[in-house]
Image 1 (cartoon, rainbow, N blue to C red):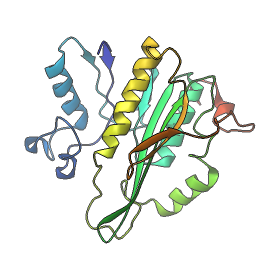
Image 2: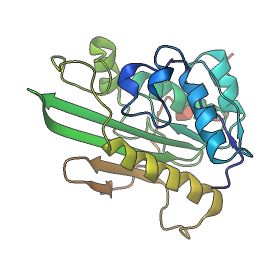
Image 3: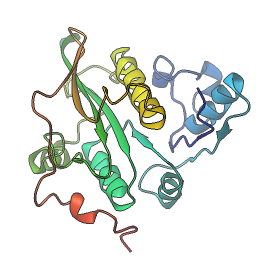
Image 4: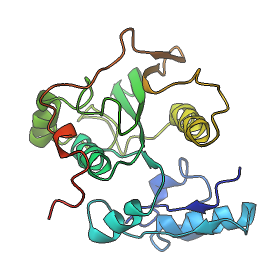
Length: 229
């Protein structure tokens, strides 16, 4: 779609549970192929002219940090609030636009009770993720204590939770947001901010009140500081 360079960042190897949720992966990749290499193969099959610079490490390893420094826009889709906070602070330090998506799934007795997600767009001069309701001290402290596996918040869920097609909705909207940041195709109608997604009824709606920069936000305090060292 005109993006000339992509930097997929992931330190993991394809597992069998990824096959139903990672486009481009095949059974022959299981336990062998780095996820970043799957992206090289898939993107190359679509447009060989697109430059792909894979990073086979996870944030905040130095290789991932260096990869992000060279980007124009960061699109984050991580499982952990703690890692999300680190990426958010990194983008503040380096004046990078951040588009973040996430989906939390709650099941009971193999039935879906809740599938709540968010799409957040934070520019260097707007509220960051720590300014709003997503990354509060309470949320971060709770994750440090509990660290539930994967996307599923039910500790008794059988097997690994699946990232269902609802994540595709958030991913597509995130891509639309990045394209709008680059081209301005919406004429300002998409704007920046926070959207809430309800996977059970399919709604994606902005927060009733815009999130504003918070006085005392620890991430915004890092704005423009560059590397922490």
